[in-house]
Length: 170
Image (tube, rainbow, N blue to C red; front, top):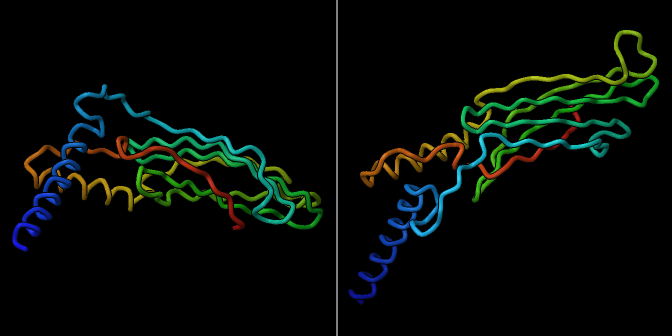
């Protein structure tokens, strides 16, 4: 019984050691050439109309994981004579193990017959520090590295594998 517990403890210690080693090498083993992760991710959604009746929206999003910045440009069009269209464009940041919610960008287009603004509107914005859960994840992995006597080398750029963009009715 004692040898089974010892083997399990050694296996667990080995798994933790392997994780820390992979973090220290940026997920590239010693035999693999490390490739630099991209400094930004870009998504162009094309026109989407499944978020609010006949309203249509499209977005161009650039996310910079190094400084947690999202640049979002959303165009929304209202086909309605007397109703505006409102949309939230939300960025989700992906890692190898999870997806984290990020910046939310609001855009509105007026009704076709509304003289106060156009029925097609383009609005853009820059958002910083919008993925606190991802920041916490990166910090916890750096804490594990530090506890193992290794430098805090894991970054948001290393963690990020891509982004997705979702529209919802605002």
